[in-house]
Length: 273
Image: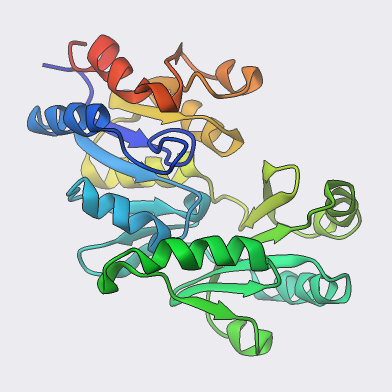
């Protein structure tokens, strides 16, 4: 039996292949891990609506850590169990500049994903959502009244611009003056959450609630927002497709996410540990 009690999985670039699928080998090994009593948990930058179809596909019984650790969502109860939304005052100031400078934005809301611009990105989500059963579809909400949205929690804000230089200037001139934690998802996309929110911190909160010591947790990831998990768990595994600076934070490096990296690592280092 393994000495580990939980497996924390990033999704994009880690659990999911390049065509956004879960391979049959990964499914089988995760089922074997669960049969040994190991809990499997999705830990993602995604909104819960774009994460839960994969939770459903794996038939997991754990909550999902969403939006870079901004909140913990329970698919069974369809509700957010705990979380820390973006502070309203600095967010209000930021959104005024977002509109003035015509930046694209996605808003992680309790009732769906709001959007301002980002037509290409939203179009991809809309097409993907159309393939899901009704109870797993994504609610995509155009930004018609930002003031009304500010009355409810906004868990994460993603800013986009197809000109990376312009986005970097905007972050340097506007975003860096505000009290938000930033994660660069890509040169053209930056993600903002409330300070203190991270995948690692929310994972630690969940583990404590389950009576699981963090040294008994394995984490898999491939990007900047996974480093906070790597720094706190007992075994950190970076994917082969992760950049060298991400791999440097891990204890082990496995194969590419398109080459069953999770399955290989679980078989080699976890299920027999």
